[in-house]
Length: 357
Image (cartoon, rainbow, N blue to C red; front, side):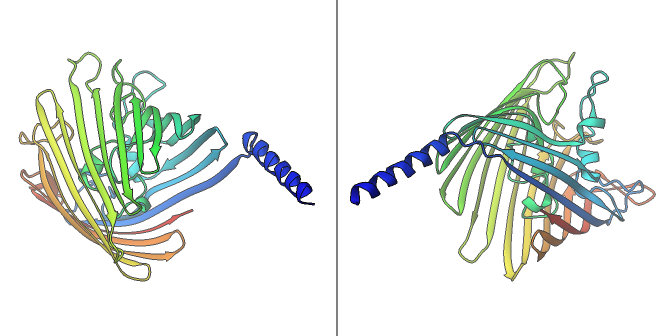
């Protein structure tokens, strides 16, 4: 009887092993996000366009910040994601896409949030290629992924998306490393004949704390211009406290053609009730030589900002978020009212209803 039972168990184990090695299961998930908003900019820009931001970009109107619909497909050794998008943030964020010839430029590029295919090379090693979300920074493209509704300046002025290939290696359960080869600094079509490279490493010593480092190296000058290597480094940290507070911060430092820029942000979110939280941010960004931020001022962009917000989880996937944000710059970079009077300060009040599934 014991021999018979043991034999049966061995047969079951063998069958399970065969099933694992020949698993052809395909997992398909449809997911999406809708982010609606109303924003009031206290400088009241005459054309309704808010400067130095992508989210929210329209003044005194109800609009759609971002809507996207995606499909994720996963198999044992392959994976893919396709996502299409629209919204006011998309319009402004993709406005700088290079247009070289009839088959490039922002008209079609802005519709594609991601179109990426991945292949498993070995245990814990994947290679993915296509258009995909940037590895740089702690803040994502969808507001539901972030502690604050509006984006920090360090997020707005580093890539949200890339076009290229990445290698991801889960070195240990606590360490993940990435290598990237891309067309450049947030561009799908090429603006020159050179490629950029970058890397990121994430170290999570505990389930509630992660320390990260990312970099970028590439020539971002258009064809016909003198080459200038862009060198970018970034250190990030995020974690949670026992009382439920979430904290995150980052410092960015860049250099190109003898000019330096830097940015920093610190964000805290504190739950105050079931599904309700307060959030605050302080930030600084300095680009006096206008490597990243173009202005009409000879002193470039040097600014300090702060924001405070209230987040309410209405239902699974649904959120109501309100935030007030202010930025003060060293030069008068904003225009106030119909007369376009120059001013150094900008403040906005925004409220948003969003739903993710």
